[in-house]
Length: 91
Image (cartoon, rainbow, N blue to C red; front, side, top):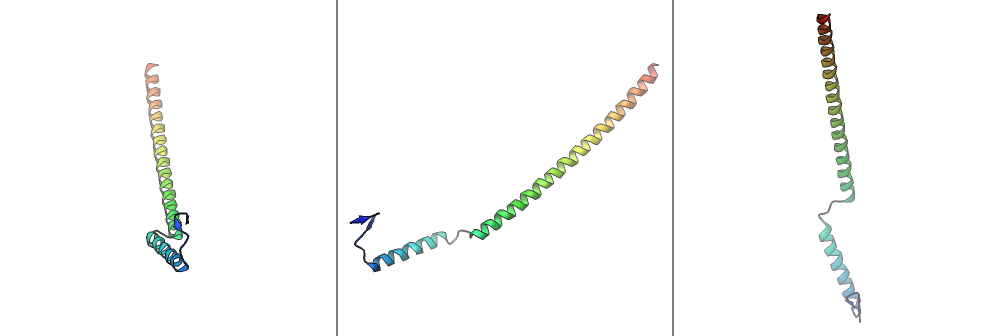
């Protein structure tokens, strides 16, 4: 008789050997995998790096907007001065 592909006529020693073989095979196959705490440590590090990167980007965008606003304000002031001068010449 066969159950799930394993012959049911196996004795205890054969079953014990099979269990040991399966455990050894799984241990070898998973030996190089990182442990759970290592994975979570890497995730935490990645999150911290991403947060810092986003903060740097946000700061750079804020600086660029402030610079652009200052430049625009200066241009507007210059245009107002030029228009005022032109208006005075016409009068």
